[in-house]
Image (cartoon, rainbow, N blue to C red; front, side, top):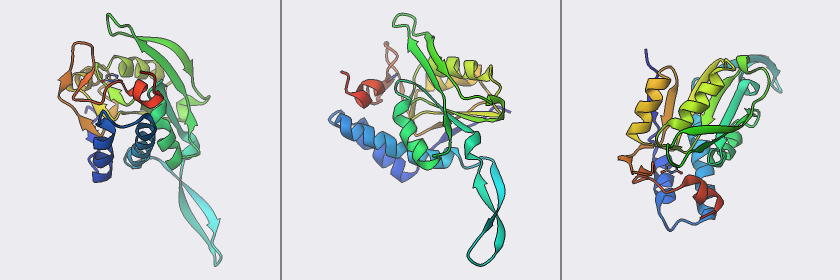
Length: 210
Ligand code: URA
């Protein structure tokens, strides 16, 4: 059965997303809001994560209790905009490992080309969460997950802030086994591959490079 598309429509996420989309939102606010949304999304994305059963001592007695198997989690931001979501995810799961995938879009073909990859060891025991704010054409996400699958992680989830219907369709036909988590599904792509209505270029807005 194909994995699902999870629409994270919690009011706090939607409220912050509206502030983020506004063109007058400053770089400082954009970065802070994206971090806050990242932390809220992390709650939903980690909802069914594997847990460890450990023995602890309370001040009164010994008991068995649960811990997230945090060291088994690996967050994989797609450079560079994916790093904007990373801080919020790490706030919620500080023990997670982090891998990076660098991809750029060929401006003519919009095809994703890999220029950097660094992942932690032991990937076959890990649950991977790929982070990229914009699932636009879907080419970067498809390429990142393809590369990640070569390392055979225990599971893969794809997290974006905004998705275009075209990107979802492309991603799902390439990776029907990977669930997508998004805060909104927007109307369409423009002729340059930007999401409409969207929020503009996520990387430029995070880093103030425009
Ligand atoms: N990447 C962005 O940063 N914004 C879009 O709208 C599409 C891709």
